[in-house]
Structure formats: C-alpha cells, structure tokens
Length: 567
Image (tube, rainbow, N blue to C red; front, side, top):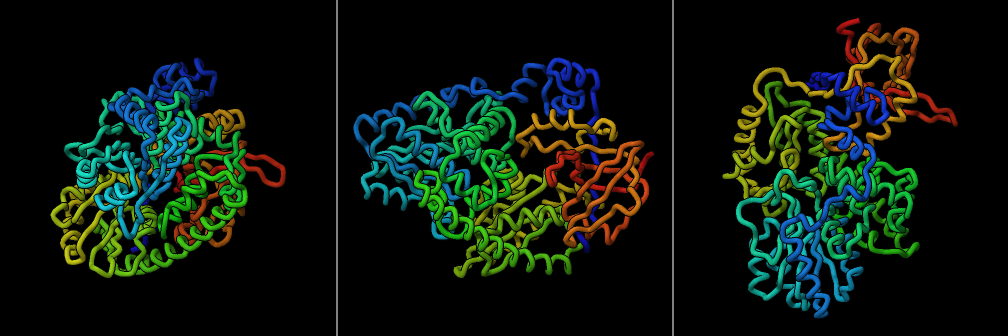
C-alpha cells in the first residue's frame, strides 16, 4: 500500500462575519485576523489584546499553584540553614530547561549549596528512583526538588521519607491516583480548569517556582525553549511565556544559546518558535537521546564563550549521529510497512532488538505522519525488555489505548498524542493484537484520511502585505495555535510554471483573476509524479513573505492541492 493514497479531508472553519468584524475593528486588524482569533476561542477585544500583545502583567501569580507557599517556605529554610539541595530533572529539552531555570532561581535566592542530577535514559529510565535517593543521602543532600518528573515517583518518595530527605515535586504530567508522599507537590493538573497555567510544561512550572522565590520573571528565554520543545498548547500563559521569551532570547543573547544558534546556522536576533522546534530543540535533545543530557544542561548554565562553543559543537555532532541512526531505523521500518501494511489496518506496532531507544520517538512521529495511523515503536534490549514510544493524531487517544492494553505492559505514561511504555518481549504480540482492536474501535472502519484543518477561505485579492504583516501577530505558532491555513478555490496553474526542486519539492505559479502568486510544496514532488494535476485547482496554503536576493515577495507555502471542486 502506498502512503500517498491516503487523501486529506479538508475541514474549513465557518466564519461568523459579525464577530470577526467586531474584533477586527476593536483591535484595528483585518477582518481575517478577527476571524482567526475567534476560531481560536477569542470572543472579546480584551482577550484579543492579550493574544496579540502579550505583556509581563499577563503572567499569573505563581502562588495560585497549590503548595507553592509550602515549597517557598521549605526552600527558605534550606537557604537559612545552609542545607544542600538537589534539583533532579529529566533528559529532554523541557527537563533540561526546567533544571537550568531552577538552578538559576535558587542561586539568585541565595542558596549556597545547590547541585543537579538527571537519569541516564538507557541505564536509569525516566524519573527519580529509590537508588538515586539513596545516592543523594550518601552525598549529604537535605532536600530534593524534582523538575519535569516526580508525579508518579511513589517508590522514590517513600524512600526519601525513609532516608529523612524532604521532597518537593514540580511536574506537569497527568496525575495517576494518589499523590506521592512529598513536602509539596506543584503540578498544574491539580488545579481547577480555570487556572491560567493549566497547560504549563515542566520548564513553566519551574519558572513559576523561581518567580515565587525571587519576585521577578527571570529566564524567560529558557522557559520559552522548554515550552516550545515540549509541544504544549501555545495558548494563555504558555503563549505569553513564549512570546516574551523569544523577545528576551533575541535581546539578551544568552551565551550558550548564541553558540548553539551559530552551529545551527541561525541568528538569535530573528529567532522563532519554529527555529526552536526544528533546530535548537533537536540539538539540545540529542545528548540525552544518545547518552547523557547533562551536556546540554551545562550549555545553559555556562557563560564561558570557549566552553559553550565546544559544547555546542558536541551537541551538533550528537544531533548528526542521532539523525543517522534515525534514518537507518526509519528505512528499515518503511521497507517492511510498504510491503506488508493492509489497507484496513488501523494501528502500527513494530518491535526489534538493536534499535536505539533514544530515537524511536522521533521515528514514531515521522511514521504517524507518513501512514496516518497511531504508531508504537519498541526497542528491545538484550535482556528482553522493550521500551516503546508512541505517537498519534488528533483523532486517537494513546493513553486511553495503553490503559485498555495495560495487562501487557510493565508500565506506561504520557499524553493523548505521545506516550511511552515498557513491555516484556514475549508480550509484544498480545499487545499488538489488542492495540489493533482498540485502534479499530477508536478510528472506525472505512477509508483512512488525514484531516486538514483550514482556517479561512480567501481569494487572492485578499492576500496582500497588510494582511501578512498582521498575520505576524499570530506568532508564535505551535501546538493548538498552528500557522493559519488558507484555502482558495478555482485557481489556475500557470502553464509551464511547475518545477521540481531537488527531486523532492514542488514549485508552481497560480492565477486567480488578475492576481498571480507563486507557491512551494515541500516534499510534494513524489505525489505529483503519481497524480499529475493541471488546469483549475483548489489550494490549501499558508501565505508568507519570501526574501530572495534582496527582493521580498508573497509566497504560498502549500499544504495540499486538489482538482477544483468549484470555480
């Protein structure tokens, strides 16, 4: 079966022109911007102003988090009594960012004895465990603060009690039953749905604790880094953190990030959320995926130009190694799936010995996009224990599926769209069968399709520089605030304009009335070798400015093309 046979199912958001116009007039923006705000849940000019123009005053009071007062009180006592504090983070970008934020925050607060730790992905797995608590006790630690982990660390929390170590948990992952026994537990999932920071990531929670300690919002750039990389919703508090954090990143040019940007061929003075997601984030993640995440943490804690430059080069090299391993695994799986996947198959579960567990999450994401199905990839170690990473689209609940298949799993955790699990090798076949049944239950029978959400139906005469400049206020884009997608019906392909670039990308010009715009579709060339389209077409795209050789033009970043359904 060819992945290219799975069509996009266009869903165009209806426009309430009255509300769109009222918002546009109140905010002095084009009507299309008013519509884009409305379909993102914004109904009043006040909400629109917060969305378009985030300010420090929009950040919520950190003491609104349950147990924040207890956490600050215990840290104050540790500072005053010269106690030793261990900040225990995670090896991904969110955990690394959170650890950096809290280390900086504790130092500003006057804590003299402060160290950090994090697990090794392969040797230790995720989160704080009892052995790490015992090690901390032997090293004289009096207080452990977890960041981006700990909400499920019941055994470690009990061990801390037994060892006489106080534990403060700061996390954002889903609560599973009773809370671990700890001195304080900071987790936005404990709060009411109305809480402004309900979707904070681990770095966001650490940012709140550091803000509560010092009274000022420091390290916004690092908070933005973790927030974008952890793919949490860029709405409300998160949108404010990322918008202000990107401004902070560009203005203050933190040494470590500046050196990392240099090896990524970026400039911090023009940084975007997409740059974090596709360039900076993967390089910071590479160390923890392949070996030890503390290398990336040292980059964020260090101000030495020579040392940070050396670390940045090492991270860049690790990222290249990661990409090579990832490509090899991807090619193996695609070769197998293209030959054997059945049209009626709803889920994908692949397992093999020898795969590196640190990169399978990335491969799972790529496979989910390619095949339009929920994907679980399991890397089985020599001892027969498999570690799996899972990814799903918006129409599938991975955590619910894992819960339904829990009899096969040693443990699991994560979110609706991304999760991880541990499984014994002999249970893989049973899990595969039950996962397929659950995928069929969730997705149903019939032809598979990918949903393409389109924000607005527009004509070419509406796509001008005034609109594109206003669209820049929709940044930063990301999860739950994607780059706006437009559609235009009945455009004509300009004869002779279709070009294939690097055997991968499609470029063409389109005419509607008197207006002609060029478009580029990345990775779309293969499709049009198989399904040539000419004449009148419907387009789905994101309009953007394109700078080339000193000239700025409007370009359509193509999402889909289909034969015209109406003229």
